[in-house]
Image (cartoon, rainbow, N blue to C red):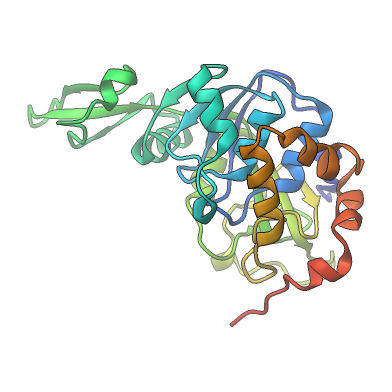
Length: 291
């Protein structure tokens, strides 16, 4: 049975207060069509656990008032500097922040995917203050060697939102370019939603299993979303839209993110309206070819 739907329908039943794992690395492979659909819905009180290199989508969700709690390793606009709305929210304490690092996110999701209560690590944090601001980072004694180990608690999410380049109608997902660990994150989620630039025809051969990043067995819905990562990049399909990212950065820095959201999220109605707003000429100019 086909799992394919629209970005709007794919996130329609995500409730307020849900915990969401969010894919994407810096300016690449973020599920922007799904994020925009959540913002249009006016969803509230989300707990976000993004990849360790989160960017514009997290900043936008904060600006839209969607976020209650955020696990933070890094949130920024990469080559365009700081993430203004995240910084304001942190300074003004308008959202709850879980101070974290890459190990917290990576090993937390690995524990969650394995249904373990925690994972032990070497003593990573000697000489740092991270355990002081995150009391969930603890130490214990290795029962086999007697040495001290650091423990990271399991992370699980109600929903995982990821962007891919190619998905078949059963949900078998191919993520190209620089990846983090979408496969592990997805296994730590109760529901997995994928947005994809391309959906394979039902009569097309199944994807080579060696290239499948997330197996269809754990994917619940697939949103057909051409340019679904825009204005960020989708490796092999299109590059990032620097002009639009600069526009976002400048408005966010001036405390006027609402103008951006009105122009590109609320007023367009859905993802098809968003693509029409951006314009086919501009989108085609971002196209890339495989090398």
